[in-house]
Picture (cartoon, rainbow, N blue to C red):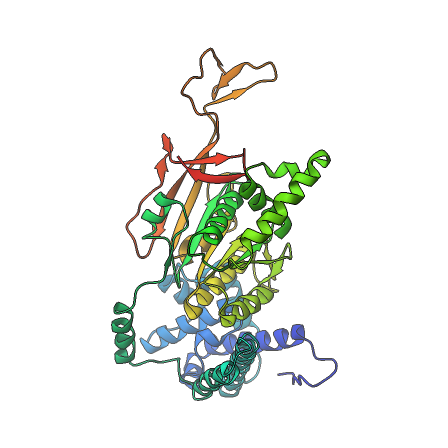
Amino acid sequence: MDSIDPTDPGFTLEREYEVRQGLEHQLIGAILVNNRLIRDCLGVITGAMFQDRVAGDIYERASELFAAGREASALTIRAAYPSSPAASPDGMRLMLRTSSGITGTTDVAMSARQIAEFSDREAAIEALEMAKNRIKGAPIEPGETLGALGEVTSYLGDIARGEGEMVDAGVIIDRIVKRMNEPPEIYPTGLRRLDHVMGGGLVAGKLYGVAARMKHGKTTLLGSISYNLATADNPTPHLYLCLEMGAEEILQRMIARHGGFNSLMFLDGSKKELAQQAAMQAKTDLHQRGLYFQTEHRMGIDALRALLIRAALSGKIKGVIVDYLQLITGQKRGQNVADHWDYVVQTLVETAKQHGLWVMTAAQLNRDGEVRGGDGLLNACDMSLYLHKVDAEYTVGPDGTAYDRKGQVLMNTQGMENRDRAWVEMRASRYTRLGHVGREENPRLVFTSAAGPFIEEL
């Protein structure tokens, strides 16, 4: 294996990635050619230590077959675990390529220790980053800095001793009993029917996915919930990552809703003074309501993870809104798009659970009504919601003639609704019964453009 020295001026993360991946692939090829070499890896590495998730899954599957006394090869792994990443086309190509490329003798025991070392290095760097952010985020008040230092010292001590990887059942039972005696952390979205099906609102430690077609209201719904959280009697501090529109446009919508007008007024030069007055009033009313933004239009997954860790350790927020999933960049070499988004969602899941945050993210549906790029959103979320837009019952043409949804002329529109409406379908939930907000024939949400725009309940 090529040596790697992080102090070398020519060192790059790309170089580290290449060396680490090459080491993992070499080990995979060696154990597939000679299954007995798996013995040299047991107790040293697990599949979770692999940088290449597919290679890690191949190692786990091969180890399971070996433990069962069966041959571990590309064909037997595909037959025994047909739905696993190892049996995917990428996995099969990796197994065939690495096993056919083995020449000479591979010191598998040394390779396993090096893979474990890479994993330990990654975990240590992440732990130190978390510790630094916790101290930097501590309030400048007597005793707070030393208190934060005590927390991170204890945490780093646990990491150094390897604690946290395996926990006795009694420890987990103690946690369960303790939480039963504590009120659950639930934060209402401000949409009563939605809160009802969600079990009261957004629950700490849970990941929520909201999927919809392009231009069907994802951002309008997330922005409406964010405004509701910030303006409630007991506001919920949260971070809004507006990766599509940007912070200014989202805030313009909130200011317009707050002032009772449509955000297009910000583009009307003749009404500049009114818009400015509304903005200053909103600044006063929304000040210190716990509404935070990240201003970049796009963000890589590594930057996202670092930001969420910093935000969580600062103690300033209870949750995060990510608008939206497919705008998070940072796809690694060798990853397909679906694997990248799966990794993004898993990062959000881990952050939510580790730091007790709720996270709500949106994703775009394709023309077939499925999540664009893969099912990672549905598979990883604690609750998956689909937002369905229903067109207004009638539209009015330039000449003032009213038309129904089929284009037929209407002579009387009295009692009819001429605003676009929506309903929310719950596709999956890990902790509540399935429940919907309205139906296609009876949508219970309505798009309001006179102010905002935003979504409210009928």
